[in-house]
Structures are given as C-alpha cells and as structure tokens.
Length: 278
Image 1 (tube, helix red, strand yellow):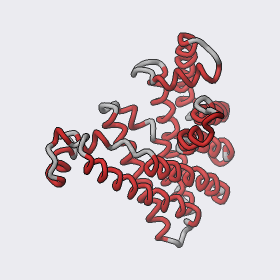
Image 2 (cartoon, helix red, strand yellow):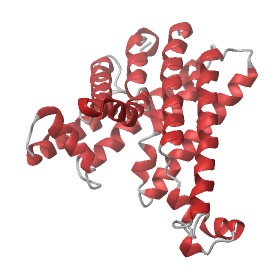
Image 3 (cartoon, rainbow, N blue to C red):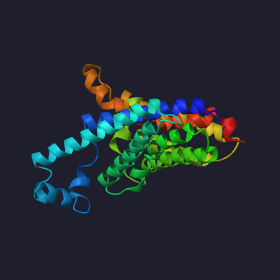
Image 4 (cartoon, helix red, strand yellow):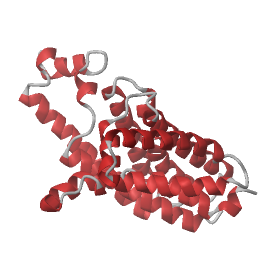
C-alpha cells in the first residue's frame, strides 16, 4: 500500500472534517439540545446540577449559556484535532491523541443527531464514513494493517451510502432539504425530484454491493466518487445566495467540509485498485 499518498488524502479529508465540525460547534452549536434536556438522558442530571426545574431548562438563559460553553469547548477540541492531523506521524503520540479525541467527538456528535432524530439508526450510521476517517488515517500512518484498512474503508462508505439510500427510497421520510437540493440544482418539479432521489437511492444499494465484487468494483467506485462529491457540493451550490455571500458561505461550506470523506474514501479505493484487488 502506498501509504504516503493515502495518508495525504486522509489528512485532507480529516482536516476539513474536524475543521467543519469545529466551525459548526463554534458558530451554530451541535445537536445536543435533546441529549441534555430529555429525562431519559442527561436532562435530570443537568436540572439537578444547575438547580433549574426540568421543564424550564430550554427556556432558562443560564442553561443556554452553559450549552454555549460546552459547544465552544468541543469546537476547541475539534480545531486541535484538525491541527494535529497536519503533523501526525508514527512517533508524535500527542498528535495521535488529539486525533483520537476528535474521532470520539465525531461519534458523540453522530449520537446527538441519532437522539435528536428520535433514534433512527440510519441517522447514526450515515456518519460512518466520517467517524471512520480519523481511524483510517491512524492506520495508514502506522504503515501496516492493510487488510483491516481496506475492510474499514469499504464498509464505512458502503454503510454511509446505504443509509442515505434508505431516506431516498422513503423507508424513512425524505428530508425536505434532499428534495429542495434536487429542485434547486436541476429545476425539476417536486414529484420529479422524488423520483430521481428514489432512483439514486436504489443505485446506492447497488453501489454498496458492487463495492465488494472484484474486478468490477472500480466502476462502482467511480459512481461513489462522483455521487459523493455532488451530494456534498450540492449543500453549497443549491443554498448559495450571491446577495448574502458571507452568510451563505459560512452556513453551507461546513456542510461540504464534513462530507469530504464521502468522496475521498472512494477516491482512495479507486486510486489504489492494484493494491485492493490482489
């Protein structure tokens, strides 16, 4: 495995992933409202520690202040993880620790969305490629574990695409932003956009299977690379307003950054197909 090039691609993906999550937590907060207010999680504990009746947590300014501080703290850790990605190597253990911490925080953020979206498993698993990326970087830096690296890379991107497909074919309700992105990108009607999403959803399932078929997998990887890039780029393109350039960019660029692994992982698998299909 040509680790030098793989490490460079994974550095790129992990840096912008961590930077995007840090930006999100600093500017807009993470998905922790339900996690810290629901009694079946940390709502009762927060109520007891802060001395705020549970029913008043969301409206209490002190709770909002502490939640802001919590998000600010996570943003610092994400930014430190992003910087550590640039310097990580086989010997610098401190940088590895920050990358690992960043990986744990990606899992925590995915869990926050899982709780916020009422425990839909696909909501958690659609972030698999994202929280796998830092660990793939750590594997590649070690210059070993080739078979394990390929196993994690293939399964993480396959699971991510399948979970997106579950929404597209309406196993779960199609998110409104999925439909709006297709309409804004193509000019289609609402019904046409739903049809296209359904077709692409089934193609996601085909991709996930084809990824594991030797000799033809490279053709499916081209699909993963192109579709992964388009679905990430669409977050910026379809929501961009030239009259509000700064606001549009700051709100939507991070949505692209955190999805960079969705097309970088297929690129790695495609670029190093000789090592993959032996």
